[in-house]
Image (tube, rainbow, N blue to C red; front, side):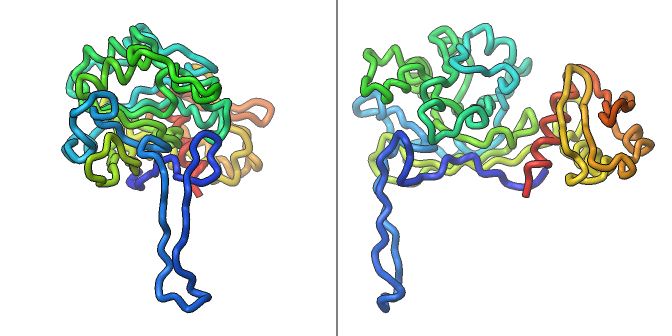
Length: 314
């Protein structure tokens, strides 16, 4: 639960969208004292942060954004169970997942889009979900200071596939409605399937470059216990894995509306009595080698996400 998780899309030289150059000066084998890598990359490629000067002449630059904006507690806007190809994220969709409390000013989307397609594929960009105009207008009514996206959030972004750039700016809805009013945008994060809590601690640190309208950004997060219902889902998942016989004993994991469904390698390793003692477990039964652990509506999704995160850890 306390590990830092990297949500940054790494800069590379073989990306399907961006042309970047990495050149090494010096060579140890030739007797040089140092090797030093030089990098040429757009400030708006890979995971990056936008400043208002990206869309408005004379506006503030990346170094004018206070660290307090991009460091702190973020609320997770979880759409992972809803997302499909070209899914339109409307005002209605956002209202359905918006937190009841108004204490949050920092937000991060969790669509797990890079688990649908590799971010180094054309399908990732061409089939992505997107924020609609009324969705961006809805976000603009909230008191947001920073918001991070794990998908290409403006529909015209996919225009690079055909070499087009749609005008006017209003078509680029999050830039038009949010960045224009001073909301900091962090674009193209990934690995959000590692987020297992509704609140996270995050560091979204842009490279300090003078007089730039954006900067490559390192995004690191820590999951937090879900305090709203008093449950520590990471601990529940850890305990459940232990009493299921360990990671290596789980061959299949799915869930329905109320139950976690597990197929084990060795049923003898499952400790049914201890599983039934785990917080929020409402029942356990098995049939044809599949074990069904009842958690109930709402809770089961959080337990499942926590299980996936821990099973995917090295």
